[in-house]
Length: 80
Image 1 (tube, one colour):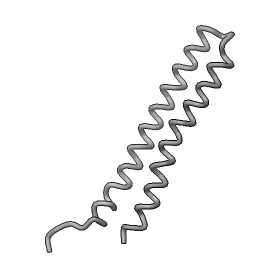
Image 2 (cartoon, rainbow, N blue to C red):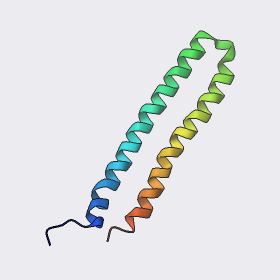
Image 3 (cartoon, rainbow, N blue to C red):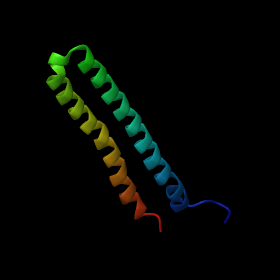
């Protein structure tokens, strides 16, 4: 029985997927905040609208990471 089981693959790939999602989320958040800060520096009078749009965008980016975390918890029950 030299094959690997599904549980073994899940034990390896679930943490990697979670780490990848967290890294991508951090990169996306940094780019969103960077762009918002540059936009507010160019047009300070539009700062409120830019900040609102940035917060909504950051919430959506963070939601993707939370979805991956939930999926990781669901799949963790299958690693036995």
